[in-house]
Amino acid sequence: MAVAAATFQRSWKVTARAYPWTYFTSTVVTGGLTVALAYLAFHAIGGGRVEAGFAAKAGSADYVGYVAVGAIAFTFTVRLVLWVAKALIGEEREGTLTALVVTPSRRWPYLIGCAGFSALSTLVESTAVGAVALWLGVRFPAVEAVPMILAAVVFAVAVFALSVLVGGVMLFAGEAHITQNTLFASLALLGGFSFPRDYLPGAVRWLGELVPVTQALDGVRAVLAGRTAFTDLVGPLATSLAISAVCLVLGAVLLPRAERRAIERAF
Image 1 (cartoon, rainbow, N blue to C red):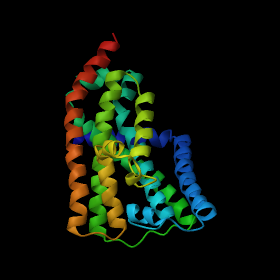
Image 2 (image 1 turned 135 degrees about the horizontal axis):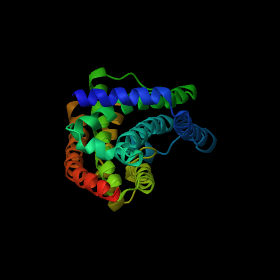
Image 3 (image 1 turned 90 degrees about the horizontal axis):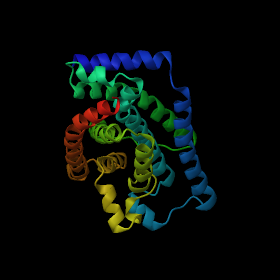
């Protein structure tokens, strides 16, 4: 794991010397405004109540809390994908991809090192969004530590798996913005971050079920709602891990081809 540690250390030094405060600010403002708008809608439009259908679909009548959890999870997802998925295409843009490819280091430790540092950085931004939610009066229930850690780890693995696959697509296409923006818009619509997926048409909902982050988020919400029985968690978490494994396999197949294509573009 020397490569992962070295990649983590490099990312730490680069970020410490030139921290992207504009990214931090825009991320926290976006997540904070999402929670704030949900708070205003709940009290000014909904009168502090939700329809019975929402409570049944969401498993809770706490609309603002539901959106707050989704905003924090979405912030973590977006930022981790941006760090990890754009790592290799960033190397290409900086002119260091060829040097990276010809080194004897393997690609997975490199990506794990990127993910380790990005998870640490992203936790800071997600915590800031959570602080905004607390300031607005959102209170998260006390949860059992072990199920919460398990659900959070599975969620992080799901985001990493998605990032690897998306990173391969970006590098193969030689383009990042259209790919990432399409992904984030699709996740916001299909992932159940701001509203229950049961509101979506059946065919569209199934598209969201194929994303590993969607099932992992269901596990996180189940723990936060106090549903920590094995039968409540094994379904979404196991499904998320299975889909994550598929994404990792696809990423492993695509990345070498994407690297060769990127090097060919350079000549």
